View 1: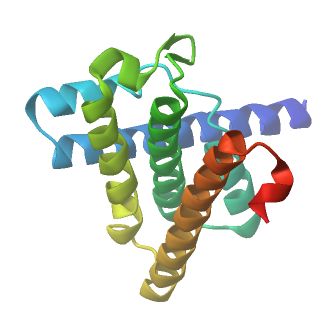
View 2: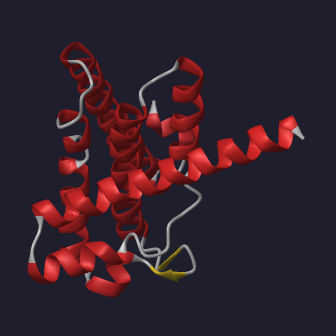
Length: 172
């Protein structure tokens, strides 16, 4: 009985955490976009994915005793950034479907997909910067974010290079 109660409490806490992260993302979109662009940005969040990044952040933060508001800020940044990369990747790979529906670019066109991906990528750190996370940690998180962004862009570039090359040996 104690295990079930603890498990239910943990699931309730996690569900509340996911709601906070989702609210953070929607609030950010609403605060920084307007009109038609605002409405199409919302389509990206209508059918969420597995939210693995949110779950991992929650579990690790819970183990480390990180305050929930700070943890939600970082999880929001990670999820916003992830959504930006999905939009860009679908456009670059010409994937027409994501999460069982038309991909962003297939719904709204290439130009708006570039705008949306850039918007999410450039605004993703705002939840962290506006949070109660101590300043020295904000600097470290911002550096991690920047380094992660560079690695993802390099990886995508390498994928294109590999796809265009006749032989993997030509890459080196």
